[in-house]
Image (tube, rainbow, N blue to C red; front, side, top):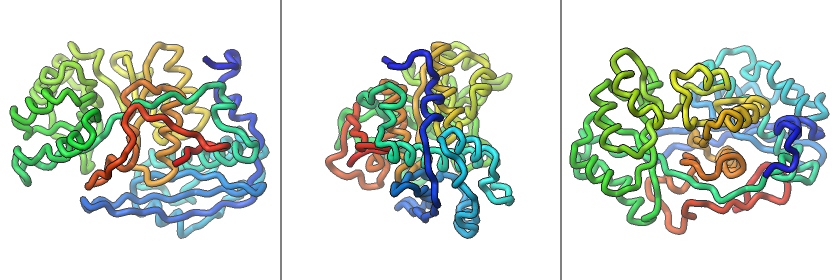
Length: 363
């Protein structure tokens, strides 16, 4: 229960004093066993003897290289509150005049700077985010987003090994999966029988990316009927698919198209639940505004990740536990996404331990 019911969440954050002396950029890039390289840059703001950190999860290597090569060229020393810093970030070209490969990457980078500022201001004030917004962290429900192996490479008998091996080690784990057109009836039957599938990411809102899926009305009908209790995320709506999807409208959720409240309002159907992804929303004001909009409109929210390598994962877990702990949050601890999943990972629901001050988690 909020302790400050008449003051908006962002307004409480915006009033936090902040002192910034300098900032630095650190390469966090990592290549996974699969061959996928995740570029990432740690942004560290310094001031008053404290540090605040945020993670830049822009996907394109060239954007990260240009950012690091340019260095900490922006003067961030002027703002005296978080609100003023957010206004400055909104006015700066954080890409230094060279347009990003993808325009929405501007939001990702803004999130990195503003989340670092929030962390710094809280540490300077000796406060936790929970103290400021008047909400407590609750046990965090999470799902694991993992891709099956390509059937054409492994055959149907081995394609589900990434899911099966995780369930063998963690029987209570639940999943968000990317269904593929070449999944056999036997594969689908096994997944349904496992009872472990919470969400299907249909990838219908991506174009010209490595994760595109060839889909159509038959594809959607097949998976919607096979998984009658699963959320159906990001289908492509057109004249052919809409009649097939309309009967399942209450299970349809959205992720990739959501960058603002306006995007939620523009959806064909008012959703029961939607992915409010901090890096995709961008600014702190816009993010907490989206949270409050969903609460007012009776729309559920869940969180999603961007293969964060560092504090970015802590931040999205923190926010999910603060704002929507019981939904199918795609924010599993990083170990669940390793090729060889380690022993001893915490199960869902996850009890988070916030650091003594700041926007961070212990352990």
